[in-house]
Image (tube, rainbow, N blue to C red):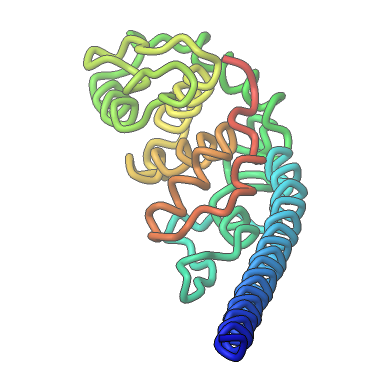
Length: 239
């Protein structure tokens, strides 16, 4: 009888030891998994922080029109990785203009590097030239250009002008783009096609709304959007 009890107790102790060993192995594996996950999270956080810092500095330069190269009007060619990410600074350099635009820049004293001052100059042209003073051909071109672009990021308007040429939006950005369109059509109409006039307006719109412009470009490329895009200014100049 005693031997059976001893044997039973021994078996019970062995079972406890086995259970304890399994518990220790499980706890050890759980600790290793938690430590690995923490390492992964710390690594990811560090990468995101570095990316945000770079994007913020790049955005400050872009908002001031300080990008190293102006857009060519064609598709941007920033490098893409297998994850769909792109070089954010390269995209900014390609879609946010800088420097002085050819022809009308020196004539009007406007520059992509001075967006606030340039908005005022261009807006005053719109106020000084009535659409009713345009010739029939000029008005046709003006309406075609003005109904092909808008200042929707600022005020929600879908065009710069109505079909009769009257203004469809009263924000300063729209005044500036309409002023440039009127100037280019009346002063350099034979030198620029409607598409080229529209292209110049699009450059100023990109400068006025850096964040939305870069976000749109990234979407067109099918790229994942870096979190640092949120650091870009949503608007340069007042409505």
